[in-house]
Length: 295
Image 1: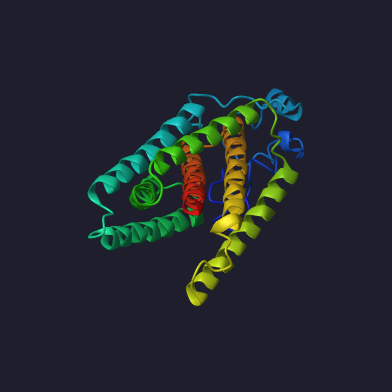
Image 2 (image 1 turned 120 degrees about the vertical axis):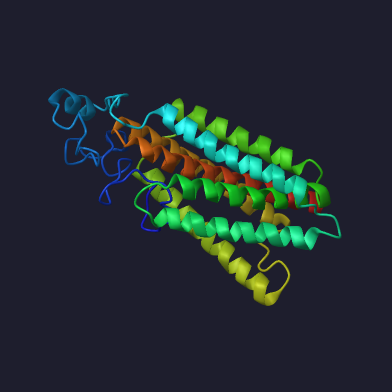
């Protein structure tokens, strides 16, 4: 997905503010793709190939050559596995080494929150950078993993036993479901879809920020958007938004490969997919906690 806000445009195969997903993609109803529309036309072996351009105009993007340093699906899978693997390892270590019993919960939770803040800063830095930084992305994954390990342990051990595994299964199910629906053509990612998701996401984040401010200065649960019946509703909305983000991620990866994005931009795909999966996991974890607390 792409927006003026670097947080929401956290992943993007772009050059000079161009974007292969919605500014030029024939699948998204954009103009016919040629050397000007394709943000990777410079240095792209298809840029001066009239046959390749004809294929693109007919809605059938050529496949990027495998030997010219262009991004492939294997690159995306490998980088995503590396990023998620780093996150999972640090989450497991945090779960094991930062106990959440009565004697240690404050220290462990403090470390987890500190790791979350560092991870947020790293994510912001990567979002503002024009190029992918593997070190930044892997560092983000490591610190985010520490936070997820601690918060998952708190929910699993003190609120709802088995919540972490349920959230993992739920996240995997959403990922698989969106991927199947996207590949089958049941989800059409176009300008209208993008606009709807962006508007919904901005509204959701603004409401959560207002709720947080009321909770900080007014005490309690703020406006109640993250607890009780309203919390359940907003938890489901958060998961649905995460699913929409996944569809945008899949579209962006598909377009990046079709347009011949540089190989290193597979790290941006990994970064975006990791952020989205973390979003979905946390929404599932929060929803499970609310449902169990209501019992």
